Picture: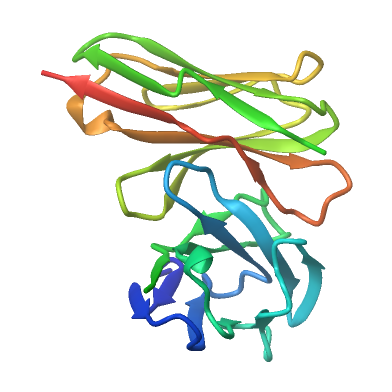
Length: 114
Length: 113
C-alpha cells in the first residue's frame, strides 16, 4: 500500500491555459474525492466518485472543471481556461466502503495561475 | 448547511504541556468526525475517526472526544512535542451526504522548546 499519489506536485500556468491533474488512489479503494484548499482555509469538497460513477459535484465545480475516473482506478481533474482565482492546492483522497470510511489524502497539487 | 468552526485559530505552547483543540459543528446529524494533521505545504494525515455512535477514540498521545448532541469535538494532545507543530483540521461527514467531508479552518499549533 503506497498511499494516495498525485501528479504533478506543482503546476504554474498562465491565465487561459488548460491544466490536468492526476490522482492514483490507494489500490482497491472504491471511493475517490477531490477537494480544493486555499491559503489559511480548510479543504472544500469538489466532487466524489464511487468506482467510475461521479455521484456528487459541488457548486464550486464550475463548467470549466471536469473530473473523470474512467476505469474506477485513477482519476483526472481538468480545469479549462484557468483564472487567477483557481490558484489553490488541489487534494485527492480515497476511502473504502468496506472499512471505516476513513479518507486518506494525497500530497496535493499546488496550482499557480499567473 | 453544515458549518464547522475551530477554536483557537492558533496556539503556542511550551514542550511537555497537555493541550486541547476544539471543534464545533452546526448540524448534529453526522455520520462521523475525523481529525487530520497538515504540515505546511503538504497533504493531510488522518489522525482519528470517531463514528457518530462513539464517544471517543485514542491513538498514542492523542484522544478525541465527540458530543454529537451539542455539536462538539475535542482533540487532546498529551505531553506535547516540537514535532507536533502543525495545523490540525477537524472534518465532519454529515448524514445523508455521499461521503464528502466539511472541514473547519484549522488550528495552527506551535510547540516550542
